[in-house]
Length: 255
Image (cartoon, rainbow, N blue to C red; front, side, top):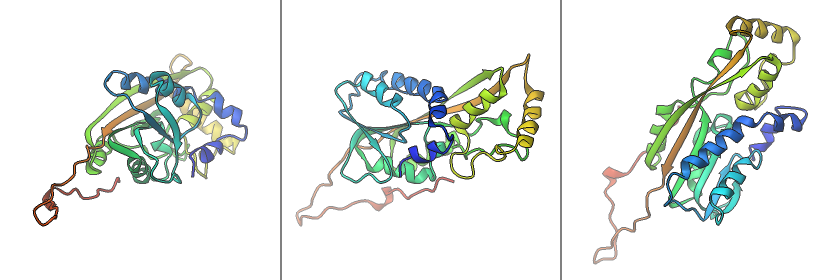
Protein backbone atom coordinates (compact mmCIF):
# COMPACT_ATOMS: atom_id res chain seq x y z
CA UNK A 1 0.00 0.00 0.00
CA UNK A 2 1.36 3.39 -0.95
CA UNK A 3 1.37 6.15 1.65
CA UNK A 4 -0.11 8.47 -1.00
CA UNK A 5 -3.52 6.84 -0.43
CA UNK A 6 -4.05 7.83 3.22
CA UNK A 7 -2.41 11.18 2.54
CA UNK A 8 -5.13 11.90 -0.01
CA UNK A 9 -7.73 11.54 2.76
CA UNK A 10 -6.50 14.73 4.43
CA UNK A 11 -8.54 16.94 2.13
CA UNK A 12 -11.44 16.46 -0.21
CA UNK A 13 -9.55 18.73 -2.58
CA UNK A 14 -6.08 17.30 -3.37
CA UNK A 15 -4.95 20.75 -4.53
CA UNK A 16 -5.34 21.93 -0.94
CA UNK A 17 -2.92 19.23 0.21
CA UNK A 18 -0.37 20.30 -2.39
CA UNK A 19 -0.60 23.92 -1.24
CA UNK A 20 0.39 22.98 2.32
CA UNK A 21 3.39 20.72 1.69
CA UNK A 22 5.93 23.51 2.14
CA UNK A 23 7.43 21.91 5.25
CA UNK A 24 8.05 18.66 3.35
CA UNK A 25 9.76 20.65 0.61
CA UNK A 26 11.97 22.53 3.07
CA UNK A 27 13.02 19.34 4.88
CA UNK A 28 13.72 17.58 1.56
CA UNK A 29 16.22 20.30 0.66
CA UNK A 30 17.87 20.06 4.08
CA UNK A 31 18.18 16.27 3.82
CA UNK A 32 20.03 16.44 0.52
CA UNK A 33 22.28 19.23 1.78
CA UNK A 34 23.30 16.95 4.67
CA UNK A 35 23.96 14.03 2.32
CA UNK A 36 26.04 16.26 0.04
CA UNK A 37 28.43 16.93 2.93
CA UNK A 38 29.93 13.50 2.17
CA UNK A 39 31.42 13.85 -1.33
CA UNK A 40 32.50 10.20 -1.34
CA UNK A 41 28.92 8.93 -1.17
CA UNK A 42 27.65 8.55 -4.74
CA UNK A 43 24.60 6.28 -4.93
CA UNK A 44 23.70 4.77 -8.30
CA UNK A 45 20.18 3.69 -7.23
CA UNK A 46 17.87 5.64 -4.90
CA UNK A 47 14.52 4.51 -3.49
CA UNK A 48 12.03 6.83 -1.80
CA UNK A 49 9.71 5.41 0.86
CA UNK A 50 6.50 7.36 1.44
CA UNK A 51 6.26 9.32 -1.81
CA UNK A 52 3.89 12.31 -1.61
CA UNK A 53 5.04 14.52 -4.47
CA UNK A 54 8.18 14.98 -6.57
CA UNK A 55 9.99 17.40 -4.25
CA UNK A 56 12.33 14.82 -2.71
CA UNK A 57 12.89 13.17 -6.09
CA UNK A 58 13.88 16.50 -7.64
CA UNK A 59 16.33 17.21 -4.81
CA UNK A 60 17.88 13.74 -5.15
CA UNK A 61 18.26 14.04 -8.91
CA UNK A 62 19.80 17.50 -8.62
CA UNK A 63 22.39 16.21 -6.14
CA UNK A 64 23.01 12.77 -7.68
CA UNK A 65 22.46 13.35 -11.38
CA UNK A 66 23.66 9.91 -12.48
CA UNK A 67 21.54 7.94 -10.01
CA UNK A 68 18.39 6.05 -10.95
CA UNK A 69 15.36 6.92 -8.81
CA UNK A 70 12.34 4.78 -7.93
CA UNK A 71 9.48 4.89 -5.44
CA UNK A 72 9.32 2.15 -2.81
CA UNK A 73 6.16 0.99 -1.06
CA UNK A 74 5.11 -1.92 1.11
CA UNK A 75 4.15 -4.00 -1.92
CA UNK A 76 7.50 -3.66 -3.67
CA UNK A 77 9.02 -6.96 -4.71
CA UNK A 78 12.61 -7.96 -4.17
CA UNK A 79 15.26 -7.89 -5.62
CA UNK A 80 14.79 -4.12 -6.12
CA UNK A 81 17.74 -2.77 -4.13
CA UNK A 82 19.41 0.59 -3.70
CA UNK A 83 22.47 2.34 -2.33
CA UNK A 84 20.20 4.91 -0.65
CA UNK A 85 16.69 4.47 0.73
CA UNK A 86 15.30 7.83 1.79
CA UNK A 87 12.04 8.98 3.39
CA UNK A 88 10.86 12.46 4.25
CA UNK A 89 8.40 13.09 7.11
CA UNK A 90 7.02 9.60 6.61
CA UNK A 91 7.55 7.60 9.81
CA UNK A 92 4.95 9.61 11.75
CA UNK A 93 2.39 8.52 9.14
CA UNK A 94 3.47 4.90 8.88
CA UNK A 95 0.93 2.40 10.28
CA UNK A 96 3.85 0.54 11.88
CA UNK A 97 7.33 2.00 12.28
CA UNK A 98 8.95 -1.43 12.53
CA UNK A 99 7.41 -2.56 9.24
CA UNK A 100 8.41 0.67 7.50
CA UNK A 101 12.05 0.41 8.61
CA UNK A 102 12.16 -3.32 7.83
CA UNK A 103 10.87 -2.64 4.31
CA UNK A 104 13.55 -0.02 3.73
CA UNK A 105 16.23 -2.32 5.14
CA UNK A 106 15.15 -5.20 2.89
CA UNK A 107 15.84 -3.07 -0.18
CA UNK A 108 19.29 -1.81 0.81
CA UNK A 109 22.52 -3.02 -0.75
CA UNK A 110 25.45 -3.93 1.54
CA UNK A 111 27.07 -0.62 2.57
CA UNK A 112 23.85 1.12 1.52
CA UNK A 113 22.49 4.03 3.54
CA UNK A 114 19.09 4.74 5.02
CA UNK A 115 18.14 8.37 5.68
CA UNK A 116 14.85 9.39 7.25
CA UNK A 117 13.23 12.53 8.59
CA UNK A 118 10.22 12.46 10.88
CA UNK A 119 8.33 14.64 13.29
CA UNK A 120 9.70 13.95 16.77
CA UNK A 121 8.13 13.32 20.15
CA UNK A 122 7.81 16.96 21.23
CA UNK A 123 6.15 18.17 18.02
CA UNK A 124 2.95 20.25 18.23
CA UNK A 125 2.97 20.14 22.04
CA UNK A 126 1.65 23.70 22.24
CA UNK A 127 -1.33 22.78 20.03
CA UNK A 128 -2.60 19.96 22.22
CA UNK A 129 -5.60 20.39 24.51
CA UNK A 130 -8.00 17.95 26.23
CA UNK A 131 -10.42 16.51 23.66
CA UNK A 132 -8.54 18.47 21.01
CA UNK A 133 -7.00 17.33 17.74
CA UNK A 134 -5.56 13.84 17.67
CA UNK A 135 -1.93 13.53 16.66
CA UNK A 136 0.10 10.62 15.43
CA UNK A 137 2.54 8.86 17.73
CA UNK A 138 5.91 10.46 17.05
CA UNK A 139 9.22 8.62 17.54
CA UNK A 140 11.53 9.45 20.42
CA UNK A 141 15.07 10.28 19.30
CA UNK A 142 16.77 7.76 21.61
CA UNK A 143 14.36 4.93 20.85
CA UNK A 144 14.71 5.51 17.12
CA UNK A 145 18.50 5.35 17.35
CA UNK A 146 18.41 2.27 19.58
CA UNK A 147 16.01 0.51 17.23
CA UNK A 148 18.22 1.12 14.20
CA UNK A 149 21.17 -0.31 16.14
CA UNK A 150 19.13 -3.36 17.11
CA UNK A 151 18.33 -4.06 13.46
CA UNK A 152 22.00 -4.39 12.57
CA UNK A 153 22.63 -0.93 11.13
CA UNK A 154 26.04 0.64 11.74
CA UNK A 155 27.19 4.27 11.95
CA UNK A 156 23.78 5.31 13.28
CA UNK A 157 23.43 9.08 13.64
CA UNK A 158 20.21 10.74 14.83
CA UNK A 159 19.98 14.49 15.33
CA UNK A 160 17.16 16.94 15.95
CA UNK A 161 16.16 20.38 14.70
CA UNK A 162 13.54 22.58 16.35
CA UNK A 163 11.35 24.52 13.94
CA UNK A 164 8.79 27.19 14.86
CA UNK A 165 6.18 28.25 12.31
CA UNK A 166 4.26 31.48 12.93
CA UNK A 167 0.79 32.45 11.71
CA UNK A 168 -1.60 35.36 12.07
CA UNK A 169 -4.57 33.28 10.90
CA UNK A 170 -5.66 30.21 12.81
CA UNK A 171 -7.47 28.59 9.87
CA UNK A 172 -4.30 28.67 7.74
CA UNK A 173 -2.31 27.26 10.64
CA UNK A 174 -4.80 24.41 11.05
CA UNK A 175 -4.46 23.33 7.41
CA UNK A 176 -0.67 23.34 7.61
CA UNK A 177 -0.81 21.48 10.91
CA UNK A 178 -2.95 18.71 9.43
CA UNK A 179 -0.56 18.19 6.52
CA UNK A 180 2.61 18.47 8.60
CA UNK A 181 1.65 16.02 11.32
CA UNK A 182 -2.03 15.57 12.03
CA UNK A 183 -3.61 12.13 12.01
CA UNK A 184 -3.80 10.81 8.45
CA UNK A 185 -5.79 7.63 8.96
CA UNK A 186 -9.47 7.48 9.88
CA UNK A 187 -10.66 9.00 12.07
CA UNK A 188 -9.06 12.21 10.93
CA UNK A 189 -8.30 14.94 13.43
CA UNK A 190 -10.93 14.63 16.12
CA UNK A 191 -13.73 17.17 16.02
CA UNK A 192 -12.84 18.95 12.80
CA UNK A 193 -16.38 18.27 11.58
CA UNK A 194 -17.98 20.57 14.18
CA UNK A 195 -17.89 24.33 14.61
CA UNK A 196 -18.08 23.92 18.39
CA UNK A 197 -14.80 22.01 18.41
CA UNK A 198 -13.06 24.64 16.30
CA UNK A 199 -14.28 27.47 18.53
CA UNK A 200 -13.06 25.67 21.66
CA UNK A 201 -9.66 25.04 20.11
CA UNK A 202 -9.44 28.65 18.88
CA UNK A 203 -9.97 29.88 22.45
CA UNK A 204 -7.25 27.50 23.63
CA UNK A 205 -4.81 28.80 21.01
CA UNK A 206 -5.74 32.45 21.64
CA UNK A 207 -4.48 32.10 25.22
CA UNK A 208 -1.03 31.13 23.96
CA UNK A 209 -0.58 33.58 21.09
CA UNK A 210 1.85 36.49 21.39
CA UNK A 211 1.17 39.85 19.76
CA UNK A 212 -1.52 38.25 17.64
CA UNK A 213 0.80 35.50 16.37
CA UNK A 214 0.12 31.76 16.62
CA UNK A 215 3.03 29.31 16.80
CA UNK A 216 3.52 25.69 15.76
CA UNK A 217 6.56 24.09 17.37
CA UNK A 218 7.90 21.07 15.47
CA UNK A 219 10.75 18.74 16.38
CA UNK A 220 12.32 17.23 13.25
CA UNK A 221 14.41 14.08 13.69
CA UNK A 222 16.96 13.06 11.06
CA UNK A 223 18.10 9.44 11.24
CA UNK A 224 21.03 8.23 9.15
CA UNK A 225 22.43 4.69 9.23
CA UNK A 226 24.35 2.24 7.06
CA UNK A 227 24.04 -1.43 6.23
CA UNK A 228 27.19 -3.35 7.14
CA UNK A 229 29.34 -4.72 4.31
CA UNK A 230 28.64 -8.24 3.13
CA UNK A 231 31.28 -10.60 4.50
CA UNK A 232 31.43 -14.21 3.45
CA UNK A 233 32.37 -16.65 6.21
CA UNK A 234 35.47 -18.67 5.48
CA UNK A 235 35.09 -22.41 4.95
CA UNK A 236 37.05 -25.06 6.84
CA UNK A 237 38.60 -28.19 5.34
CA UNK A 238 35.20 -29.92 5.45
CA UNK A 239 33.64 -27.10 3.42
CA UNK A 240 31.71 -25.84 6.47
CA UNK A 241 31.21 -22.29 7.75
CA UNK A 242 30.92 -21.57 11.49
CA UNK A 243 29.39 -18.51 13.16
CA UNK A 244 29.74 -17.27 16.72
CA UNK A 245 26.14 -17.07 17.99
CA UNK A 246 27.21 -14.72 20.80
CA UNK A 247 27.41 -11.93 18.24
CA UNK A 248 24.02 -12.51 16.64
CA UNK A 249 21.63 -9.63 17.29
CA UNK A 250 18.10 -10.18 18.56
CA UNK A 251 15.10 -8.31 17.21
CA UNK A 252 14.02 -5.40 19.36
CA UNK A 253 10.48 -4.07 19.16
CA UNK A 254 9.94 -0.35 18.66
CA UNK A 255 7.58 0.60 21.48
